[in-house]
Length: 68
Image (cartoon, helix red, strand yellow):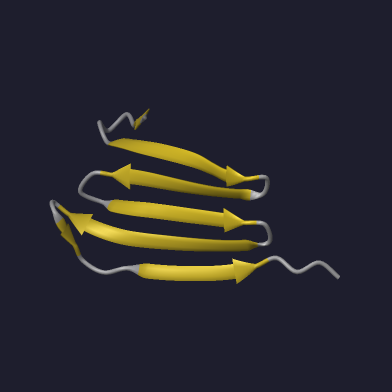
């Protein structure tokens, strides 16, 4: 858990899924749920703003690291 000087709190949970894969979820009450899924060169990020128990939308981003 992280506690800011303003009293805001957030909780992060990380799960290793394999050698180069992980899933990380961060909950910030009355603000957002953030999920990051890393799978080798691919990364997916999902941000879901929350207000109480309502999810007000979702933003999804997917990227791949390419080395030349």
